[in-house]
Image (cartoon, rainbow, N blue to C red; front, side, top):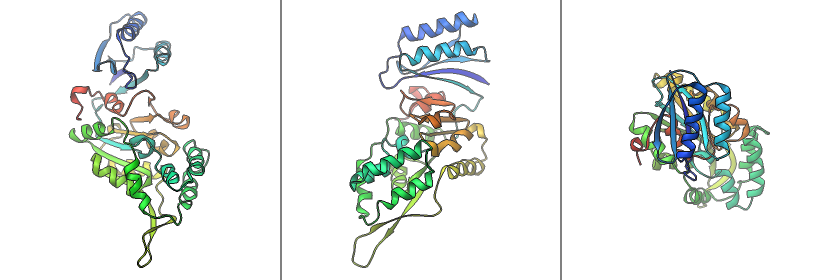
Length: 304
């Protein structure tokens, strides 16, 4: 088992010698030892590597506070030989893509405000995900299914998503997109990003003779929820004969809690407080490359 202090910042790329020397100096002063410092990405990602736990809570708190004042992410990671994970499960909305897809559909039909309010409550765990999904989808009733294709052209893929999927695929990992959103979008993202599999909910579309397809306002059951995400995690662990320690999961809201809690690396990516409390890795100032840095990948190992 090895231990790492990982610091990352891909927003402003401002990790400089002052930052590194300050942390190295504090670690040496508090432990009496010089610790190996490894560069993963110039000015963006560095880690200190330990063979055993020698960092106490006081030192952790000082490092965290110091880096927080500079808007730099800090994660304390422990891992065995399987630090590079064999299975990734990733949420879609506000994780792989910048947007919340249902919010954007609401924008296209002039009901953005109504839908966003429900989305926020669901992501913060204030209302049940299934209830929120059913209420939001009902607002789409009667609208042309053409808006689904329009949405594909409007979404933005988060920085680092392509490198994350390509790099893990290249290294033999299985990459799974699992979303409480919809299959029309997850299948599209699977095709352009290269996910191994994708799972999501299905919108019911109706069509009368000689008329264009219409959104019925219903979700085809069963509904994919937070428990479903955990079930997929367990299913793929069994399918590929993996261990829990081979897994990394990433999301941002309450619907991701169960898979995040049960992954070896459970990542909150710009997550809500309710998810932050359950995750063991957090990124606020780092793009999705952070998931690769957390696994020990350096820039020269990342597939672009």
